[in-house]
Length: 409
Image (cartoon, rainbow, N blue to C red; front, top):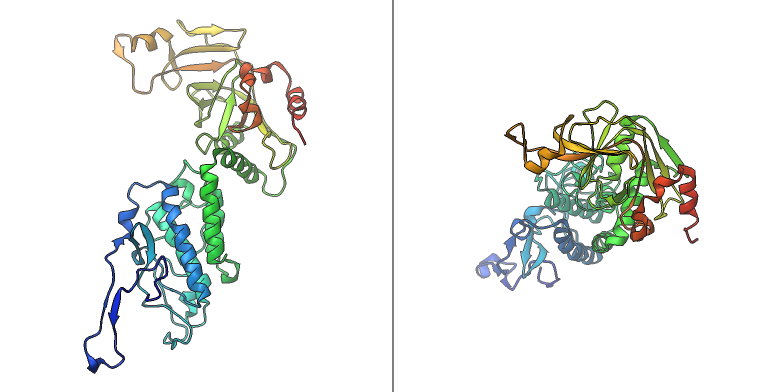
């Protein structure tokens, strides 16, 4: 503490004689703030950013052979706007007399590495610190003070995506899983932890690179071992699950309609009509899916896309609704799921003399056609001329050939 290393609450002055008879023992430290006061209503990036410098401080300590062994939220303080380590009561350093009992545990209850719980005297302090710092970061990001048991899992109910659906969590997921590996030798160093946290922040700030990265992550989730050039789903439950995966991160995707234009898919739900899906974008589209196809031009290609083919269905011909058979759609006002009335009800904000219910909205029911879904930053989406529904005028194979002809290798 007297070394005045950045990221450690320092000793300003002290008098600690070896012989207590020589006078009182005392030391003076600056007044720091609790960790919680620094992260009220902060974004994920604002939370992760100070942990980059903190991880670098930890790396500096490790290079000196110093291991904290008690990293937890309560032992992190903010001083002059910087996150700092405090409370070195369990610190281990060169030439220190080891007072840890054999097979005893040392460390914070909710962030302790498993090897520190089994036999702290023999455990390596560096990997244990990385484990505890990673778990501490997760606690701060989620606001869950008791952490999680064992190794972090991005598919559990405690995954970061459950708390921060607006960000690309997959690189953080991978990092947290590695840092909390049960094998200390498999964990990254504090230096690597700092570097990868910094890379994640840069990725979040670069929307183009982040968007294409997340698009690739979705493909890896669908095809963890290898990406086929084409995959097709025909069961409505499978189609719904895949589309939900493609739309799980805000602003990731862009869907092009059969009649022109496009919007971001926000969510997918089953419709009241059997065999139909509701595609929630800026407006609601009701579709009876025939099949969903994933077209790949390589695992990391920005040109990869989904194509949703709709069954041809008869119009409901709702009285007062709008029908365009040439475009293959009809539009009406939906009072409740499956209850359709005249569009006039929406314009008048009332139906049968009563105000419209809270969930009422105009919906478009497609009678036929195809949709394509690209990543938001794909070359196809960045070309404004593609909003002319050209994909709906040619077959599935012809559209794939058309896209392939524009890819520069």
